[in-house]
Length: 168
Picture (spheres, rainbow, N blue to C red):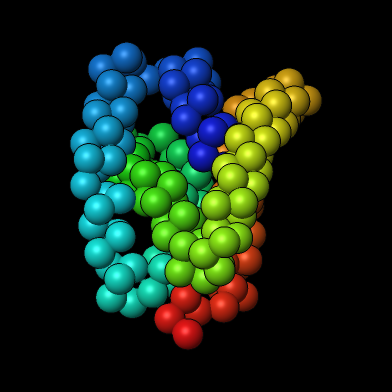
């Protein structure tokens, strides 16, 4: 519910409301894409060492931080930090969730649980994008979408902390 709106509204928000050029937007997306090449793998290795739920919670925290940086700052350096935070978090989440399921669910139930999680992921992304459209229409600004993304990310980070450890 948070990743979709972050991506879908970024260029429009930063160009239409903040006046950034296509060059700046391209730089931000380059950062996100470059980090995506390595972040899932690197955070997966970290999860093997300290635990999936801890790294997943950190990923959601980074996502929330990235949204706050986009919403609150128009400094290009801080927008680069936001892109770094998003690039590290986004790609890792899609590997950490199935990893957690595979380690905590019984083998005969894991596929069904993963399928249900993927359906929820798709529905959540669609709902987040629709909600983002309504929020921006109602408030007149996409900035509020990023505050909403930050809130959802923080709630996800907190929700992960109550999961049982996959190491048991």
